[in-house]
Image 1 (cartoon, rainbow, N blue to C red):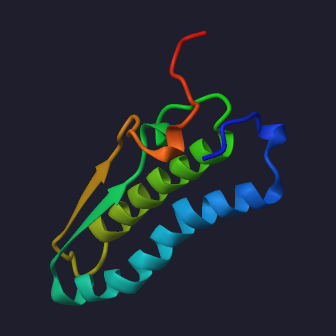
Image 2 (image 1 turned 90 degrees about the horizontal axis):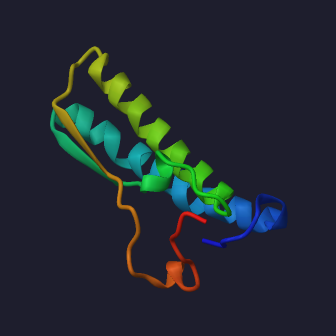
Length: 112
């Protein structure tokens, strides 16, 4: 989670952010969703981020990827709600603000 201005990010960082945060969730759901629909049962739990709802300066690619996750899950929920089989699939999305991990080393939260 490189913390720097958007123009200071290189292409590799941006691609890696989307591969990790967005595409990994899409590929995982594509693998398991058909079985959930056939079984008429399932619960999809997604870990997103508060950054998927609230923009944060110097984290533009990260925030964009989390906004993408949020939009993706909301779209899938709507698809399932209107699916011809009406499968009983539950959705939970978690939006943590921050976690004490190595991703946040050197990042401070303040209003300045």
